[in-house]
Image (cartoon, rainbow, N blue to C red; front, side, top):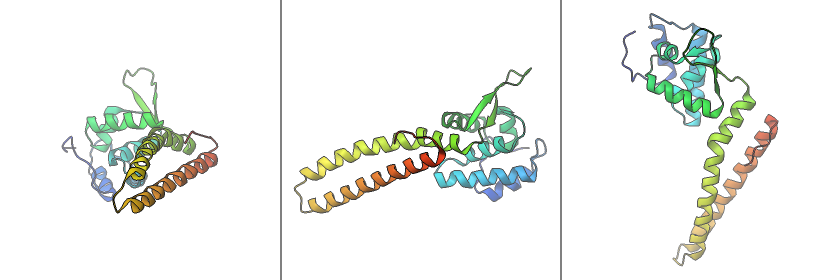
Length: 185
């Protein structure tokens, strides 16, 4: 298992090959495929691949895993695993678990879609939407005060962005209702 601490999966297909070549802590085929599935999922969200690898491994592992075990199984740096676990904990996607007789922190995946989606909305989307709303208000004032020949065009585009923002907020409300919880949007 001689790979540099900065090793990262460039694509999900490489994950299966890399994990197959690992002598110790070898993962089963189903585990590799589930990890690859989560790597693809986080790519869609624009998140680091290591986040998908970590969550996928914890999701498909029957027992809680310690940080050093995650590092060994995925062959990624301790820093990447530590940052990924912190990010996933902040989202509510993983939780620490006490393992009797072991002083190390162990982690397990939260498998409920409702909790995952609410954590992502609360931790990632809402702060960005709030920031975008404030910036949009500033842009409206700027566009209304603009006296250039493009003023009408700017105002129309700013209105369009406002419509996108409102529709995005409505979509999040629908998602929250679907998940059975109302989160401020």
